[in-house]
Image (cartoon, rainbow, N blue to C red; front, top):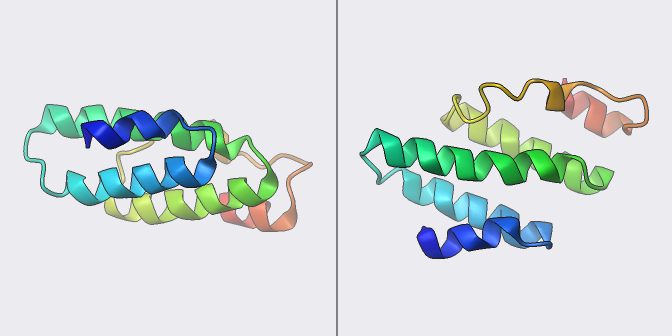
Amino acid sequence: MERVSSKLAHTNSAVALSAIRLILKYMDYLSHPDSIRTYNNKISAPLITMISRESEISYLVLKTINLVLQKRPLLLPKELKIFFVNYHDPLYVKLEKL
């Protein structure tokens, strides 16, 4: 997980999302709460920054966040304003944010 965590800051969003999915997969095997919290923080920052990209990438990230929050509801506890609907968002992004 440490080797993959360097890919979270990659400019290609597919690489970053793949790293996030891999880290989430292996977080099931962690038992120490501090390491789980550390990886939650490492994952949440790239997800938040990728929402502000193009609308297609934003939609994909929102779908990923939806799936991740079903499994780990404490991933984004303080990041409510990223889900606010903007007037220039396409309809499919607005519906996913809601």
